[in-house]
Length: 114
Length: 113
Image (cartoon, rainbow over all chains, first blue to last red; front, top):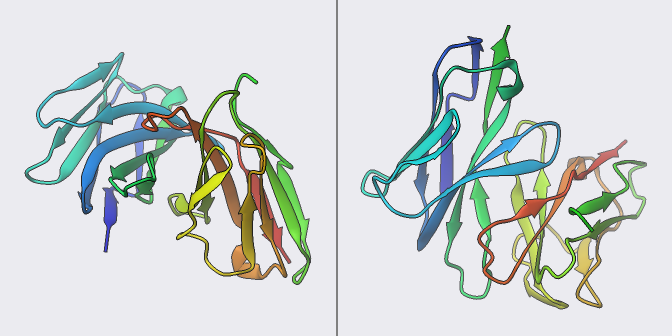
Protein backbone atom coordinates (compact mmCIF):
# COMPACT_ATOMS: atom_id res chain seq x y z
CA UNK A 1 0.00 0.00 0.00
CA UNK A 2 1.36 3.41 -0.97
CA UNK A 3 1.99 5.73 1.94
CA UNK A 4 3.54 9.04 2.84
CA UNK A 5 4.45 9.77 6.46
CA UNK A 6 5.29 13.21 7.79
CA UNK A 7 6.86 14.17 11.07
CA UNK A 8 6.41 15.89 13.34
CA UNK A 9 2.65 16.34 13.03
CA UNK A 10 2.89 19.68 14.79
CA UNK A 11 5.65 22.05 15.71
CA UNK A 12 5.68 25.32 17.67
CA UNK A 13 8.68 27.62 17.40
CA UNK A 14 9.58 31.26 17.91
CA UNK A 15 10.41 33.72 15.20
CA UNK A 16 13.98 33.35 14.03
CA UNK A 17 14.20 29.64 14.75
CA UNK A 18 15.15 27.12 12.07
CA UNK A 19 12.88 24.14 11.50
CA UNK A 20 13.23 20.85 9.66
CA UNK A 21 10.18 18.97 8.48
CA UNK A 22 10.43 15.32 7.50
CA UNK A 23 8.69 13.20 4.91
CA UNK A 24 9.21 9.50 4.26
CA UNK A 25 7.43 7.52 1.59
CA UNK A 26 6.74 4.09 0.20
CA UNK A 27 5.22 4.45 -3.24
CA UNK A 28 5.33 2.17 -6.24
CA UNK A 29 6.61 3.75 -9.45
CA UNK A 30 7.82 6.98 -7.85
CA UNK A 31 7.94 9.99 -10.17
CA UNK A 32 8.43 13.02 -7.96
CA UNK A 33 8.01 14.42 -4.46
CA UNK A 34 6.31 17.75 -3.88
CA UNK A 35 5.96 20.11 -0.95
CA UNK A 36 2.93 22.34 -0.51
CA UNK A 37 2.06 25.05 1.99
CA UNK A 38 -1.56 25.05 3.10
CA UNK A 39 -2.93 28.17 4.73
CA UNK A 40 -6.65 27.99 5.34
CA UNK A 41 -7.69 25.75 2.48
CA UNK A 42 -5.80 25.97 -0.84
CA UNK A 43 -2.40 24.21 -0.91
CA UNK A 44 0.19 26.29 -2.73
CA UNK A 45 3.16 24.74 -4.48
CA UNK A 46 6.62 25.08 -2.95
CA UNK A 47 8.98 22.54 -4.52
CA UNK A 48 9.11 19.54 -6.77
CA UNK A 49 11.99 17.10 -6.35
CA UNK A 50 12.87 14.31 -8.71
CA UNK A 51 16.59 13.70 -8.23
CA UNK A 52 18.47 12.68 -5.13
CA UNK A 53 20.88 15.03 -3.47
CA UNK A 54 20.00 18.18 -5.38
CA UNK A 55 18.86 20.93 -3.05
CA UNK A 56 16.06 23.19 -4.17
CA UNK A 57 16.00 26.66 -2.62
CA UNK A 58 13.52 29.49 -2.53
CA UNK A 59 14.41 32.28 -0.15
CA UNK A 60 14.47 30.91 3.38
CA UNK A 61 13.04 27.56 2.30
CA UNK A 62 15.03 24.65 0.97
CA UNK A 63 14.37 20.99 0.34
CA UNK A 64 16.27 17.88 -0.62
CA UNK A 65 15.35 14.34 -1.61
CA UNK A 66 17.03 11.03 -0.81
CA UNK A 67 15.66 8.37 -3.17
CA UNK A 68 17.77 5.62 -1.65
CA UNK A 69 16.44 6.14 1.86
CA UNK A 70 13.02 7.28 0.57
CA UNK A 71 12.70 10.56 2.41
CA UNK A 72 12.79 14.30 1.98
CA UNK A 73 13.29 17.23 4.31
CA UNK A 74 12.01 20.78 4.13
CA UNK A 75 14.07 23.39 5.96
CA UNK A 76 12.87 26.84 6.90
CA UNK A 77 15.47 29.22 8.31
CA UNK A 78 14.81 32.43 10.26
CA UNK A 79 11.13 31.57 10.61
CA UNK A 80 8.51 34.32 10.55
CA UNK A 81 4.91 34.38 11.78
CA UNK A 82 3.82 34.25 8.14
CA UNK A 83 5.35 30.79 7.86
CA UNK A 84 2.63 29.43 10.14
CA UNK A 85 0.71 26.89 8.06
CA UNK A 86 0.32 23.21 7.37
CA UNK A 87 3.13 21.86 5.21
CA UNK A 88 2.08 18.96 3.05
CA UNK A 89 4.37 16.43 1.45
CA UNK A 90 3.04 14.58 -1.58
CA UNK A 91 4.43 11.90 -3.83
CA UNK A 92 3.48 11.52 -7.46
CA UNK A 93 3.42 7.96 -8.70
CA UNK A 94 3.30 6.80 -12.27
CA UNK A 95 -0.19 5.46 -12.74
CA UNK A 96 -0.30 5.26 -16.52
CA UNK A 97 -2.76 7.80 -17.84
CA UNK A 98 -3.22 9.65 -14.56
CA UNK A 99 -0.55 12.32 -14.67
CA UNK A 100 -0.29 14.25 -11.45
CA UNK A 101 -2.08 11.88 -9.05
CA UNK A 102 -0.62 12.72 -5.66
CA UNK A 103 -0.40 10.74 -2.43
CA UNK A 104 -0.32 13.15 0.48
CA UNK A 105 0.94 12.86 4.01
CA UNK A 106 -1.09 14.21 6.92
CA UNK A 107 0.97 17.38 7.03
CA UNK A 108 3.00 19.19 9.66
CA UNK A 109 1.21 22.03 11.43
CA UNK A 110 3.84 24.71 11.98
CA UNK A 111 3.09 27.56 14.37
CA UNK A 112 5.55 30.43 14.64
CA UNK A 113 5.14 32.70 17.67
CA UNK A 114 6.36 36.29 17.55
CA UNK B 1 -9.67 32.83 -14.88
CA UNK B 2 -6.69 33.74 -12.75
CA UNK B 3 -6.96 30.69 -10.53
CA UNK B 4 -9.05 27.62 -9.75
CA UNK B 5 -12.44 28.69 -8.49
CA UNK B 6 -14.72 26.50 -6.38
CA UNK B 7 -18.24 27.06 -5.21
CA UNK B 8 -19.85 27.12 -2.81
CA UNK B 9 -17.18 27.85 -0.22
CA UNK B 10 -19.29 26.27 2.50
CA UNK B 11 -22.17 23.83 2.27
CA UNK B 12 -24.26 22.47 5.10
CA UNK B 13 -26.44 19.51 4.24
CA UNK B 14 -28.81 17.34 6.20
CA UNK B 15 -28.01 13.66 6.11
CA UNK B 16 -29.64 12.12 3.06
CA UNK B 17 -29.58 15.26 0.93
CA UNK B 18 -27.85 15.45 -2.43
CA UNK B 19 -25.16 18.08 -2.98
CA UNK B 20 -23.31 19.41 -6.02
CA UNK B 21 -19.91 21.06 -5.82
CA UNK B 22 -18.54 23.10 -8.68
CA UNK B 23 -14.99 23.60 -9.91
CA UNK B 24 -13.90 26.12 -12.52
CA UNK B 25 -10.28 25.30 -13.45
CA UNK B 26 -7.66 27.59 -14.89
CA UNK B 27 -8.48 28.32 -18.51
CA UNK B 28 -6.76 25.92 -20.86
CA UNK B 29 -5.83 23.38 -18.23
CA UNK B 30 -6.39 19.92 -19.54
CA UNK B 31 -6.13 17.96 -16.31
CA UNK B 32 -8.56 18.28 -13.43
CA UNK B 33 -8.49 16.48 -10.11
CA UNK B 34 -10.82 16.20 -7.14
CA UNK B 35 -9.41 15.51 -3.69
CA UNK B 36 -11.14 15.00 -0.35
CA UNK B 37 -9.51 16.32 2.82
CA UNK B 38 -10.89 15.22 6.16
CA UNK B 39 -10.08 17.24 9.26
CA UNK B 40 -6.46 16.73 10.31
CA UNK B 41 -5.64 14.60 7.28
CA UNK B 42 -3.90 15.16 3.98
CA UNK B 43 -5.93 15.39 0.78
CA UNK B 44 -6.95 12.05 -0.73
CA UNK B 45 -7.42 11.50 -4.43
CA UNK B 46 -10.96 11.03 -5.68
CA UNK B 47 -10.96 11.27 -9.46
CA UNK B 48 -9.12 12.61 -12.52
CA UNK B 49 -10.24 14.09 -15.82
CA UNK B 50 -8.27 14.75 -18.95
CA UNK B 51 -10.43 17.15 -20.89
CA UNK B 52 -13.93 15.64 -20.71
CA UNK B 53 -12.74 12.09 -20.20
CA UNK B 54 -12.80 10.68 -16.69
CA UNK B 55 -9.65 8.55 -16.83
CA UNK B 56 -9.43 7.54 -13.19
CA UNK B 57 -12.22 7.31 -10.64
CA UNK B 58 -10.58 4.75 -8.41
CA UNK B 59 -10.60 7.10 -5.40
CA UNK B 60 -14.35 7.66 -5.26
CA UNK B 61 -15.40 6.10 -1.94
CA UNK B 62 -18.79 4.80 -3.02
CA UNK B 63 -21.30 4.87 -5.84
CA UNK B 64 -22.94 7.83 -4.13
CA UNK B 65 -20.10 9.96 -5.51
CA UNK B 66 -20.25 11.03 -9.13
CA UNK B 67 -18.17 13.55 -11.08
CA UNK B 68 -18.50 15.00 -14.54
CA UNK B 69 -16.77 17.46 -16.82
CA UNK B 70 -18.98 17.43 -19.92
CA UNK B 71 -17.27 20.15 -21.95
CA UNK B 72 -13.75 19.70 -20.67
CA UNK B 73 -13.71 22.80 -18.50
CA UNK B 74 -16.07 23.19 -15.50
CA UNK B 75 -16.47 20.09 -13.37
CA UNK B 76 -19.14 19.10 -10.87
CA UNK B 77 -18.75 16.62 -8.04
CA UNK B 78 -22.09 15.26 -6.91
CA UNK B 79 -22.70 13.38 -3.70
CA UNK B 80 -26.02 11.62 -3.32
CA UNK B 81 -27.69 10.76 -0.03
CA UNK B 82 -24.97 12.47 1.99
CA UNK B 83 -23.75 10.87 5.20
CA UNK B 84 -21.84 12.31 8.13
CA UNK B 85 -18.60 10.69 7.03
CA UNK B 86 -18.78 12.74 3.83
CA UNK B 87 -18.02 15.87 5.88
CA UNK B 88 -14.70 17.18 4.59
CA UNK B 89 -13.11 19.84 2.44
CA UNK B 90 -13.36 18.98 -1.25
CA UNK B 91 -10.44 20.38 -3.21
CA UNK B 92 -10.26 20.76 -6.94
CA UNK B 93 -6.95 21.13 -8.77
CA UNK B 94 -6.00 21.65 -12.38
CA UNK B 95 -2.83 21.44 -14.41
CA UNK B 96 -1.59 21.62 -17.95
CA UNK B 97 -0.88 18.44 -19.89
CA UNK B 98 2.49 17.84 -18.27
CA UNK B 99 0.57 17.33 -15.05
CA UNK B 100 3.36 17.97 -12.65
CA UNK B 101 2.30 21.27 -11.11
CA UNK B 102 -1.18 21.32 -9.68
CA UNK B 103 -3.00 24.53 -8.89
CA UNK B 104 -5.53 24.06 -6.14
CA UNK B 105 -8.75 25.89 -5.48
CA UNK B 106 -9.78 27.04 -2.01
CA UNK B 107 -12.10 24.10 -1.63
CA UNK B 108 -15.66 23.55 -0.55
CA UNK B 109 -16.16 22.71 3.10
CA UNK B 110 -19.04 20.26 3.34
CA UNK B 111 -20.69 19.64 6.70
CA UNK B 112 -23.32 16.92 6.89
CA UNK B 113 -25.53 17.11 9.96
